[in-house]
Length: 266
Image 1 (cartoon, rainbow, N blue to C red):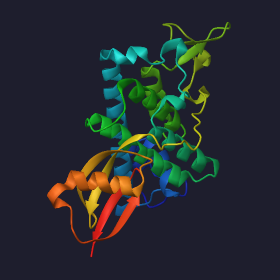
Image 2 (image 1 turned 180 degrees about the vertical axis):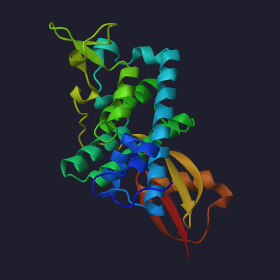
Image 3 (image 1 turned 120 degrees about the horizontal axis):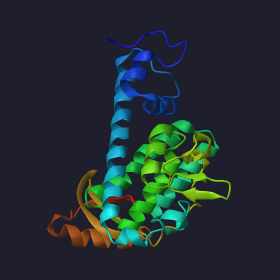
């Protein structure tokens, strides 16, 4: 059974049933419209659902690793945890927080949602063993990511926030983390009550990165680099890494610091 073509009363019931409220909220923010009955709309909804499943899987894996890692014991947890301690995060993570803040402040919800989905790739690198975060940074980044995701996917964010120990309660004497066995609903603290992560436009010149090296647009290798490397420094490192594969007829070099070095042959 396909979705109804009539979406005048809101999101069609088919989409709510098949994909859930969080996926549909993200869909509307990302696409700027209600889903209809086209294959393109359904493909977009499927893509967002895959993103949410990756998000959940990665968050669960990071939490499991943090429980097993001695390094995680050194992070800010429990009553001492401040998820907005973004200055302790790597530059890429701070840049994501800055970008989402900047776009939300201008009501650019579609590009803010796109940044959230792209930002998850930072944690997918960690999952694949190709990232540059230590376990403490990885855990702190995920906590900030959960807070950032709350306006986009509030149900998932609330569930993960509780699993990460960020949810708490008021008992008349102040706020406490953790949830006691018996607690009135009105005393619970939502993820929406937490401070929104804020990051300035960070100086990333000293941040370590893995720089893709391409020849005529095709990736050939990656090199360890610093975000602030000059083009000449990156070119020398690329030549050393490529060795005999370094083309002798390079006509132009396209270099985006921290992002890519592309050698264009004549």
